[in-house]
Image (tube, rainbow, N blue to C red; front, top):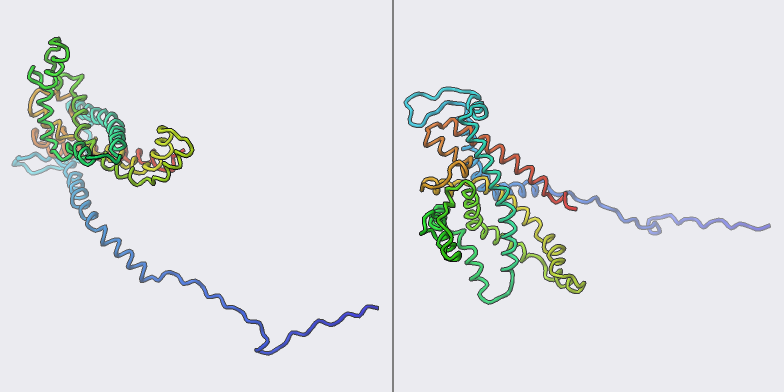
Length: 332
């Protein structure tokens, strides 16, 4: 019969007891530190928030209030409450709805053409100037120089270029190229080319700004990615598609959205060219131009305020839609 030995007894006593390591709970972030971080963030964003409230929020709120009143500039009569009458007239009165819808269509046409063309041109210039060449800073300055010029000055210069007479620079150049067969053409007065002239002018003046932003984005892409692509025998187009575009996707989206907002604000060039005479006003009328002329030419501050409020809401909605379409989550 097999005997079973008893198990050894566990020694008792503090000197033989196994040591047990105590696990302390992780300390949570101190509330004081969170409060300080929140306070620092608030202080750093305060200038931008105050500027946004003072220069955007307050004027928009004032325009919203004025849109409910019949306010005439320079009129001795007291403003009278109109309710939604200004908005009703804006969409039902043919004398108001026709020019407003035409101006809105001109704005949309301008944005649809300028945003992709100017963004693509700025990207091409940024890639071209993102090279280590002699005097590359000079070339960058030359392309950026039109941005420094005020839009009013640019409009005056382009008015001389697009002048209808034979003394216009563009007509003179085309006449010389065609050996005298090109006559004087009214680029600004013809409805078919008036908006196209405004678009070309605006792209020439603003493309340098977007170019600088995209150039900064290109310089943040690590060079090792291009070296790895070359080792994989990737061509220039494959490097552009699989390295450059993903590397500047966020910058490209920002530039497109910024260009969209700026394109809806087109006013200076139209106003200068129209006031100079010869520009087809109906073909180039924008919403901002109509709001300014309604306020200061017709002295109807209430109607101009209603135009700006409606246009502001339209731009906000279009911007939100564009942001939703181009957000990173929609990338394939």
